[in-house]
Length: 250
Image (cartoon, rainbow, N blue to C red; front, side, top):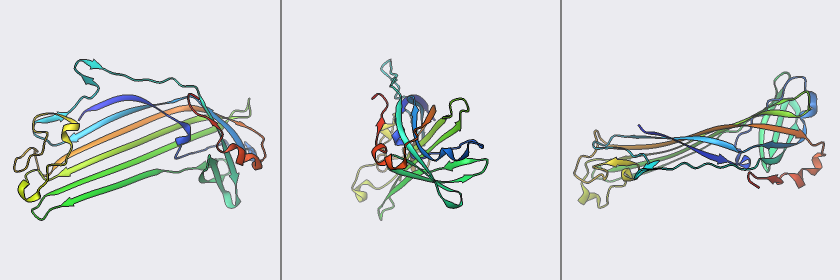
């Protein structure tokens, strides 16, 4: 297994999940329009590679020909508006841009809304001779924003946290009849591994066990301090504010 670390930035309007937790005793004033601000979020990203090739190992893509390459960004803060609406029976909705996030309001616990994003796709190819190629792409994104009232300013302060994973996994028959199948091997081992036997050659064993396996996992995580200021604007103003923002670096 090879683990590599790098940094990346993420913009606030990519929020797919919002968790707002407002302290007890704050009263009903969390309902309305808020101006949210936070500095650039830095994501720590790690890549893991799993494989079962006989004479290969994960490539260290951060070091090539003696070079070590690191990238970093420093951008101005972002600012955008969010609207909080409270309904009957403890229901609530937070709107950021044109995206609603449903949740609940409870005494003592405040307001909580959430949304988890995921996408999975699978691709299979079979041949009557026994050859099989299988690919799975998986994406997960969990984000949370926790805000508590600052009694001195009357505003909200908290932390926005994000964690995402992207996984691509391949399986391919190792020893197969190339003449019958009529195609070259498809598992992209040469893009992620170093060593010998990176091409799954027909009629030749390149992997320790059947089938040949390759999985690439990227995990990114970060958090940033967030503040929110109550605007006092009437909710009728939302149409003019929902798309208003200062993006990071803008």
